[in-house]
Length: 301
Ligand code: FAD
Image 1 (tube, protein in one colour):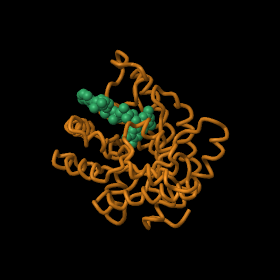
Image 2: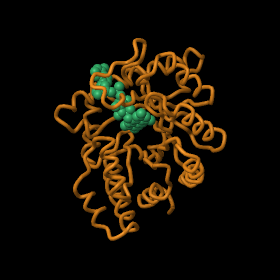
Image 3: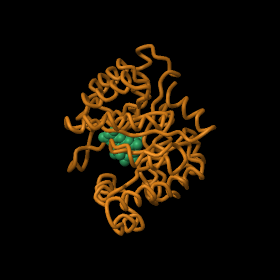
Image 4: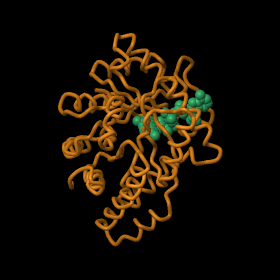
């Protein structure tokens, strides 16, 4: 069953639960990843996505994580794939590698161009936009005789960018192009205002975009992590969250404040009709599981 099938059915009974992992960069991080995955698996997630570095920087390690998820767990992996800085042949090779591993669910992303490059251009035969990568993945799979109904390709959506006056139409046009190319679902970037997600979904439906849009949620349990995330994504932290984290007395209180803030956000978007929650885990299980427990979607961590 692909993620498209899961999202098509599961949310009728309950919201889907999914997690994002990233490939570990050190032996220590590798060693702590798998116990965390074992814990996360207790929440019976509907799928688990694995990030892929821009410029193919994690090609081997992302593939290794996905392979172990397939061979060593019952979890359904979604392989992120980026195309920035890669030739079409390289992208095709990576798609082939993932298909060889048994992957049938992808998240097609462009990836961020290297920092400091003002006018980024793809390689002459490269892929410029994520929507084109969606088509390419589907074409490569079709070329190998994999039926379209056995594959699902998701894409990224951006509630905070959609909330800006200049970004709104662009965000909708880009998401529509991704759907047109064959995307079956979208996972969102982080956001902290529930209205941003709900407005994106409303506007998307008005624009004829029908694919499920699953909100990405992060329990931010330290101020440092919150600042780092804002820096990486460009999504501004709400002052309320910052003061909840900064005002907490110690690490335990910060942890609780972070999980509580994520709970409040998640509760509101689930009540607003979100089909599920995609939890960014930073390869740690406790905050993700405590968030789900607080929502009645899983037992305590
Ligand atoms: P695109 O849709 O290609 O958009 C890139 C830019 O081009 C945008 O400015 C868009 O407005 C513009 N654009 C798109 N189509 C057109 C068009 N037809 N005409 C004109 N302009 C257009 N990055 C990683 O490196 N690895 C990961 O694993 C990863 N996972 C992510 C997971 C999620 C859920 C999210 C939300 C982001 C993730 N990212 C990841 C970051 C992502 O790669 C960047 O945000 C990237 O800048 C945009 O990716 P995209 O797939 O939306 O690209």
